[in-house]
Length: 437
Ligand code: ASP
Ligand code: MG
Image 1 (tube, protein in one colour):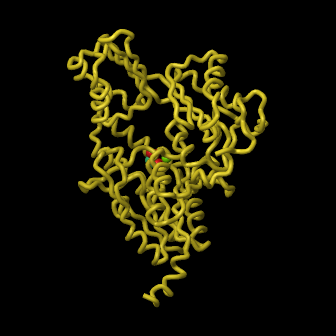
Image 2 (tube, protein in one colour):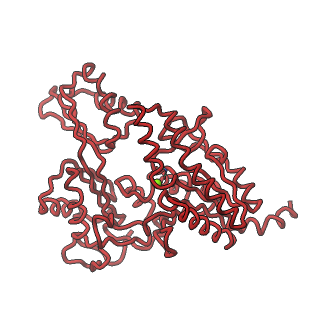
Image 3 (cartoon, protein in one colour):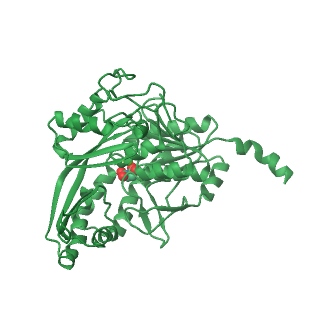
């Protein structure tokens, strides 16, 4: 035992980093070369380096389109077989470049990398990471490239993790290998709002896991929601940064590690929501359970739910909820048999909804954020269709067309811009200058 610990000491001190490159960062030969150089630089700086690479450019979108060219409802298992090819291409190409640069690289499929998932095709969850093969390759001095966004199911089929699932692969590998996770992307970090809508949006230097969870759940596209959940559960620090420049980006950390705690940190949005409204539901115990169970069995993700109770007993109730627009067809299909069974009067759908959310760990203990949010939207003539809140988030569903204006107005009203005067903004609700806990 004693000689082993002496031999293992320098090895154990090595820093492990899992570098994730998004689709735009490997879009063409030149960018693959740049990503490879960045990976090699990390290796030469002494780190044990694993890189997970996305499919190039719009490859995943193209593969999805290809599937819909031949089938209205592509079989999910075959969809996974198809989609998993994109990431393999990027890994093989990057490995070739790294080998030409004089380093040893090995590319692995999700299955070879030991990523074991459940069997829900096209949105599988990682159950286990058996990182032995990666670990051995790293110990041999190799750079390991992993085709992310994919794994092998407990039924030995190829699975994919859902759009944006590469982030989850990267975080899961970092957790398994005990390293940090660096997410290289085409934006400089996480912003206070989408800079395409808000020109003076500010790059955040840090965000807590909780804030990032709310932001990812409500439309921020920088990190996939599951990756943040995974990072929080396993304590993996994430650094989101640009693959085109060397400046630091945004760190996602535990709340204890973050220093800033503004009332509102960011305004996020999504424009791919759909609403389903059920009218004339029988007002009896168990009905909401039946509706949601049917949707859950069809793997439909329900987000906001509102139910209106009739004023007098024994009458009919109405229920509205939102789903991702892509889930609207499966939702309709799942509800169809329930209509006759429960005697639902009508199922109406609206595919053109959007959602705008304010997120901030600081709002946990300060009232007034909701009041101000609704007033700002009202003054802008924007109708609020649905509302939901958490201790650190306020979300409103509005018409899809109203989303950009809502984001812009709220970002300004809460003084989130790069040049906004932040402390003691007289227009704002009370904002403590010393962050409180
Ligand atoms: N290529 C996949 C996608 O576009 C996975 C990823 O990039 O995260 O969703
Ligand atoms: Mg992506």
